Image (cartoon, rainbow, N blue to C red; front, side):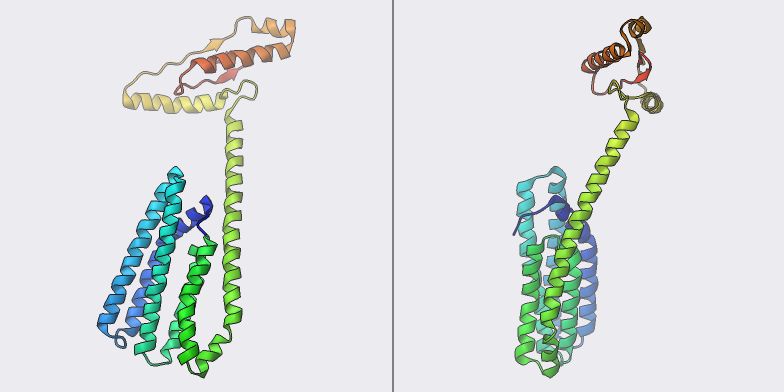
Amino acid sequence: MFDYHYKLIEHMVKATPKTIVALILLSCMYLYAFVNIIPRDVLIVWSVLQGIFIYIRYINSKKLQKYLEVKDNINIRKHIKYFFYSLLYSTFVWNFAFMSIVFYAPQHYELIAFAVMMGILTASISSISALYKIFVIYFIFMLTPLLIVMFIFGEHSHKTVLLFMPVFIPTILILARFVKHNILELSQVNDMLAKELLKEHKISITDGLTGLYNRRYLFDTLEDILKLSQREGYKSTFLMIDIDHFKNVNDTYGHQAGDFILSEVAKHIKSAIRKSDIVARVGGEEIA
């Protein structure tokens, strides 16, 4: 159940700020709608419980973001468990709110509670379905208590609504699975495009024969290096290397031999420089 894919967890973490804003707005709407119907002390208790959940959700997302950056699998798995437990806590908080409506509000308000529940479950698809198994459990724990109350104590209108559940429940679950696969596929396509762009960029700045940087990259980088050295007040060194009598090598032994010599010279230079140094083939047998 706590198996995960990095991209799916990243999606969930990125969706958390929007989820928190939506939770705060929905909580305010609930309080406003029932402030004169449900006792104030009940609403205060619920507000505190909801505030605790929002805080836990925020901290959990920050921790997951931190461990995703360093790919700490142990802590990622641990905080996914914490995320699951926080969702179970959330189902308790929301069912506490809905049971308060059932207990204190006129009976027709139960249909409003049911509509809000459907809205929460539908909205949660975008933020939780990335962890599909956890979403299914959350879905069951959220929906079941209210359905039981409506079935046992509801009037004819309530039971009529229940007739739509065999259609609604599979639809939501199928939609959640589709969203999960869609997120994963889009992430994989984006990764593939990013790798292709990186590959194309590397080709555009690299000399194909020697593997050194090319002339264009050298002069673009030199401008930045000179500006940095002037600003920081340190000296930079520029060295030009030319292979003597290289034309004679090409004329005598052919261009393949000349290419081989250029490649070998480039390998020796690269093995002798620091990581901070830049080596480029300026043109022909000239290396800088």
